[in-house]
Image (cartoon, rainbow, N blue to C red; front, side):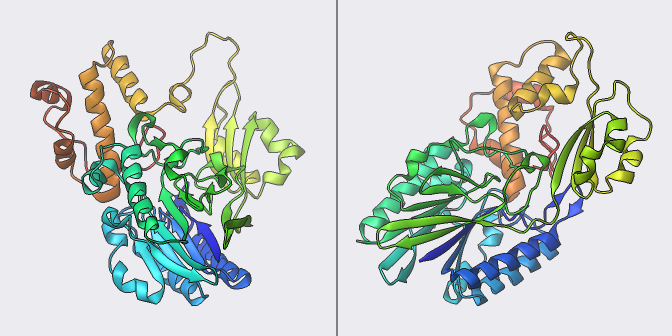
Length: 423
């Protein structure tokens, strides 16, 4: 059996305001061509099909057309929801679509129910695990409210199912942050404070583990891999080799895994230097047609730098200013200070900065709950008050809630994290 492992399409996403829909359509066409050329039996997509819980009409149309192309090319298509998807919306009519060769799994209650397919060597059991948000899935799975606990409970159901399928080879897909994976700037945090990471050992005994969520194509073990996103969504991915994995299963399990390169709509370039260097030096010439991020290091801000740079780099998308400092004691800018820090640290640090004392344990807990509320609200539209009820066991007094929140819940709608990304 030949399996094409993909994930993190993020249909409807833009790149620094550049519409990527045509590039996403080209990528789905590319996958259909790979299905035909390589005689692929199954296309497995491990979550984050859409970029947001309420996708635009164009993104929905593209998914409808794209899935039809893949099925028409001769493959069974297995899709699961990610943390960016609305499980309810993506899973609509999923049982009816299975008869057409399209298997969409979004319900935590079905994690132990395989998609059973066969080749000349017998059955292959696919378990497409949707993203399991602990606050929403723990009760369904009878687990504690943590990422590791809900995935462990899901895998217990998978293993129980496999015991009744003697001789079946197993493929699990999961949308999760597995320890050892390399992150980029474009992934949304799964939990506040790094608590969303889970050990690879949770998935022991599976023939192939198809992972989604991290946007770099990478290998955690011979049988466990991230396909990464097919397109770059941040300049931190400038060195990524985008694509998918072509997995060959034989009677004894995985016989081989080959990388499949994805089409690149335009290269990325991260450039740095004084304005005069960037405008004149030949060494920057190969990057003139790239989507560019430029960091200017001039001691003083030049006049109209964007206008000047775009004469040479017409696809300049992001301009940063980081003046060279002559003394080691000169204070760094705010952006530099918070770069790479977890969201909870940024919020607690800001609270300390504006009032002159550190956050108390109760205040830290409230900030953590608010960040978790924003994560879940962006995924499923869960109201802040509903999430507060889910976390009611936290010992925080009404007086502290009133003092910190002033009777207000976080605003509904678009959220942005500490690095300015959409939540």
